[in-house]
Amino acid sequence: METNQAVLAALYNLILATGTREWERKQLIQAKNALEADQVQQGLAQLEAALRPLALRDNLTPDVMDFYQALTDRKSATRQHATQEAQRNSRLIDGETAIFAGGCFWCMVEPFENHPGIISVLSGYTGGSVTHPTYDQVLTGSTGHVEAVEIIFDPAIISYRELLAIYWGVTDPTDAFGQFQDRGNHYRPIIFASTKKQMDEAIASKDALQHKIKYAQPIVTEILPATTFWPAENRYQQFYLKQPKRYRQIKRTRQQLQQFKRWTARLKSFFSYK
Image (cartoon, rainbow, N blue to C red; front, side, top):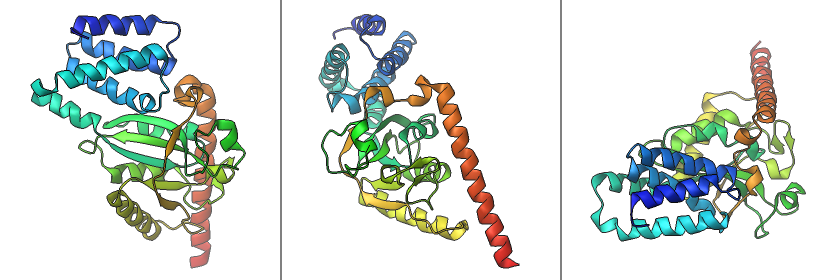
């Protein structure tokens, strides 16, 4: 792609193409808007970062994959002439990865995705023994996988500790057999640490939570080393945007169950004291 005009034309063609997935189209539109606002480096860097998790797993539609490859070739060719702004975007592209399992991944994307510093959130499966598992396979509970989200984030904007705080706030750390209305071994809560630093911070965060907040039962969330993360099928990506009404219903039920467990813990603590 020799000129920004060529990039913009390619974006328009992909946005209008019937074969482009809705999630892909959303990323392309954001990049198009950035280019039209003369935010070229930032727009292309964010687009590359958003597409990269699926591109590395060959899970983009063919035309978008061709565009991604051309985009990365363009970035490589101009890297030696990068400005300070491009260097900032390069750091953004090389963001850190966090993986959390906390019940159905339908409800684990939106709590993270709308925070500053989050580059992308991908639904998928991890922790099992089967390669390239499908949703139906994982649902049986026989593969050993759990539904999880892979989060690529810029640690200069949002820290791993902040992600842990979000995670504890949207999960039930006392439930080893699922999460809220999601029952089964493939819904159990697990933090998958990608580095030793993440492992140490996750353990410290779990210990602090146990001491600061009284639960009716002990905290059972596991903390394990990260293993291969397999992206879920495209129809399960960004569920909260594709089916907002259904997502709101599921989210409301989770919040109600979470509130009920909090009140139960408070009552137990009160009567134990009395």
